[in-house]
Image 1 (cartoon, chains in turn yellow, purple):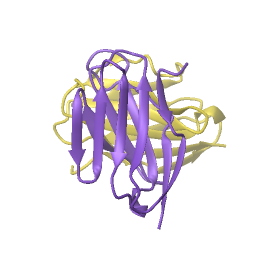
Image 2 (image 1 turned 30 degrees about the horizontal axis):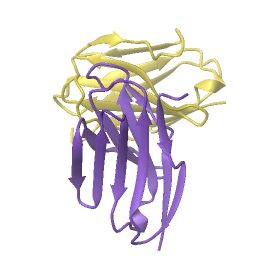
Image 3 (image 1 turned 180 degrees about the horizontal axis):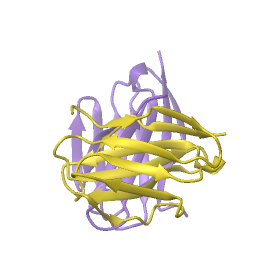
Image 4 (image 1 turned 90 degrees about the horizontal axis):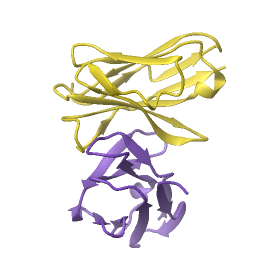
Length: 114
Length: 110
């Protein structure tokens, strides 16, 4: 596609429910990154993919968070048993390679956990 | 001490003014990113630089690797430049696993 696409743009869920967030990167981009932006923490790294593999999951805040990428393209970030502190904007970005390259960001998913 | 520090946190300017936003970092880096986020909007990458200076339109970014410092300049500022400007550096190595600064909220008044 022309840009990085994320869905849904907004998600309201109840505490304890599972949610799935989707990211469709720019076609041909090898690297895909998930970040989170919350009021108290600012922007923080969650996980990145090189192709379909995730060399670095160190930013995932707990084992309730997982992510996968299939076909070197679409990625889903899953949060199980959501908590109120998970409320944030979840941002996806892609780049042509996994080095220090220009990032292209999606518009994010605003997650609100009630 | 944060690994990436920006100053100022907030900046109000009059249209036409020259603006400078500073970023200091404590880790060794391969490149530094400057990002722009408009209110309610997504994030746009403005620059990625590893040395010297880059210019795009009215925006100029400079970096001094030895001093671990970068600046973003806006010449002839305009109200549409109002946004949050964020610098970010890699944790280590040449990746986009980034540490972000807390951002500078810029308001340019007409």
